[in-house]
Image 1 (cartoon, helix red, strand yellow):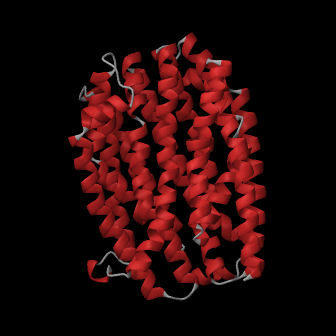
Image 2 (tube, rainbow, N blue to C red):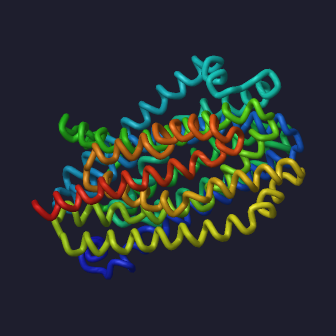
Length: 443
């Protein structure tokens, strides 16, 4: 059945069969994020909202660390399955699962050990320290559960088990939503309560993922007896996993940089941007879901050297993603004030948040091009292209745009920097994709 999906099923149907569960799981995660933001904002304490917003990049950082073995491993496994090397795929799966656990424990220890220094780097002040520290502590304690969850959730999709991958995300998010108000208000834990609910949700999701790999998969395993792989295979995982991780690390970096550039304009601007970025995730993560949901399909057909099918997959992916990005931009720009008002009904937050949201949305079409291109680079093992794109959109290009635009246009320049970065990165992505396809056709 899995081979039919990857080799014979009509491209739109196969793509959607793999991508829709990923998108649905991300929508559920988004609902959690929105509910989380809503409950935090419901406290009415602006400093609490700002404190959590300053530390929020840490959660993205945990996802980035998980992507090293989640996206890196799934890229390698997809190609191995396409080459009919099932035993090697099984070994790679076991390796990624166990190494991610050890890695996660190390990250938890480091985050707790250097808590004061890291909070300082995040821009936490005396006003926001109490809330930021409370949220940070629990995210650090539960880092291993967040990092680990990214591995089986990605690897399950390589065998066509996208529904099981989605189910784990949904289960974790539902637990989050249920326990958020209990911990924040019922147990009066405030910012710490929000982080505790997040960690608990990830732990429950992890338990389900392990069950899915053991009981539902035919070609994957959690058994440590299968985790012995070659140094070359480890290199293949890291060559794709690290650039994939850098993409999320750059997102963390972008949030920290943006917050620091906004701090001189007041904590209300930081709070407004925190809400705007969470809302922006609605469109961004749906686009990410549709882009990366089809990654196993790209990797499999690249490994199988099926040129015609690969071209059809990419054509469909680009057209669908760009069209969806345009639709989201129009909707979000029209209803920006009403959306921000749902989370915090304060005139200055609504005014600033709506403007921030609109500027964030301006680059969505260009981000769509970058997302599909990044997905292809990771799927086919093009580490160089994946690395360039991972450090560009929310890294090097963004910093340059932020420095230039903020100096020229001040506060407004800070807000428009991401859109400028999106345009430039999309142009770079097109160049990389042309080179990849030229090389593939030649070979």
